[in-house]
Image (cartoon, rainbow, N blue to C red; front, side, top):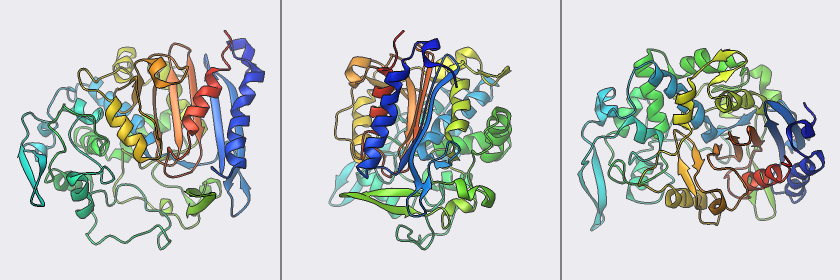
Length: 422
């Protein structure tokens, strides 16, 4: 911890982060938070509030382990960039060059008499499109005929860990599990796309396809690659696809909102995270701590270097965190996504890079952030961002699903930026 004023931040104003979080906790909107702000490589705020497990009366701790869901995506992006740097592929390559099952894709063009109409894809899906959600792939929770088909085919079965097996939120699937990521991609490629590749921003399982690609070109399992190239060298000791027995006492409970409170959704002691997932999900399978994620975020903020070790080249990280949208707007797709997760506002001023969002016009976002801020979050209300202009990292973790029920990230960013005085 450093004195905030030494890096141009007000101690007094930073207190508003805790005040903001405690208000949400007192109103029974979220169980508790771990929040962190680092500027110029110095931690100026690292605070816990509320509970990690309400039923067991366990407080949030700085080393509490969280389900980070889609906050796994930027880690997948960094892994992808490592192999890209090694010349294993070009971002403009069709993914079918490495995963041939994506060679002849069909695209949904509507429904007629209850039957889906399709046409052939006019261009192949590129690796860059997978990484920026413009591939035409989808998720089962995205409304429409393709999303409905994902549901019918149980397309996301095995991606990540099920909550409390046997509990209220657990539903047994009817289809057999996939043996590995490649078996899954072959089934996925049988389904149509929501739009022609490169034409629409649509949130998707693209990052899970990238996990299969990483396996294919590295010759390692996805989890092995992450452990060997990112987690172990960075010292991310609590990040992975399971919570081992000896760490279970640090694993936060996960909640869902009720009209005036919360209800337990995933009890750590019964959680599916106690055992390995069927498929290692690059789109949403990881657990982590705020301290672990700080190391990863600082590496990105440092343009690929952390504590004397280089993980990525400076220009590669600039490429990863730049806006990749071109003529395609991410605003509409992000609005649809955020509204599905509970946010009621129209997203403006946002672009998208490799596996994370990028601020294109700060004023339009409605927050006093910097141009170029790169960020992403997870379905259970975990968020991080890096800001090269201010040399700043912000992280807020809680466990309430769906994210967007309350503006946790927006309030955290506001409370952080209003504290900058230099």
